[in-house]
Image 1 (cartoon, rainbow, N blue to C red):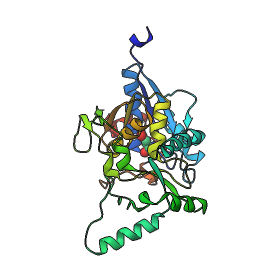
Image 2: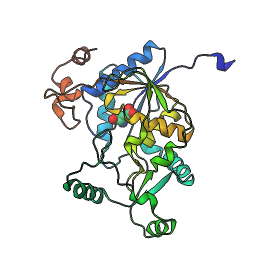
Image 3: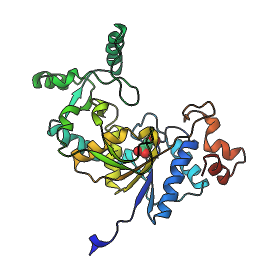
Image 4: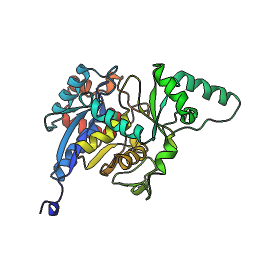
Length: 296
Ligand code: GLU
């Protein structure tokens, strides 16, 4: 009779320990925590530290301290992405075996140079939803021999998703249910459009997984049912829905929330110590003050 029982909702806050938590993080963390409580659900903290060059134990300790001070509690043990590289490698391997992923040897600098040369002629290079130039795509059609030789040479490379090949694997419309709202107020059933991102990177020479691959696998691994995060990740959801489809993972509900602008109207930055939760705490603010500052 297990299937008759309603599934207990699972929420998570998933910060990267590459800086201090700011008001935007506080909003995300508190919304997740409050919603979990309201829905009688579980609340998890996940440390997204795949970028081992920028993430530090000190920042992680700061996150734990700030969240505790805000009055949040979460389940143990806390999942750390750096402890699950094998999971990401295995999923990547499966996609490589299916011919959906290919090695890409162009460096960021080489890609930038191509885009700059092209735009010098006056035409605009296509951009992804974050405004970054779409990868040129030329290595997609490298012949197997050439590819083998490049791999054998040991040249550092990333692995990219062949987006055109991947999207045709999806037979039904790829959608998600949006419970919050996108940057344009999108809500309800949203049609995913992963092709806007081009051939995204799934793994880099210096990190075994990209954000997209790790977040998708971890949310499934932790049986997360409700993904509550900032609107800046609204369009990334198209990629996550595609990866869920390709890897046979369950579809969570999504709630993208408003962002907290800095005083200058720009996005809050992790490197700006003045708007960090720790700085507010040291200046004598209370958790209730923080809630008020972020409109909760
Ligand atoms: N680790 C991501 C960040 O700090 C959040 C990932 C997510 O919520 O999906 O921006």
